[in-house]
Length: 92
Image (tube, rainbow, N blue to C red):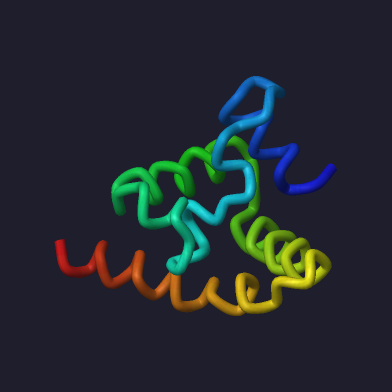
């Protein structure tokens, strides 16, 4: 099962969840990311973990997906996105 299907099961009861690409959390250059708050991003990550998803696996699957979609720049932005999230958490 692809990571997007796993997210659909957690957040949308098997339907297509509007944030299923997870660019909302992992792509700081996307409109999806800009359209969600820091708190929402953290809650998405927590909910994913609380539902049995390993964040390391989720992030790796995300990167592989975008490389396969011929969007390596999206895959490469993950570290920057996570650093932004951590910076926001540590500032509070």
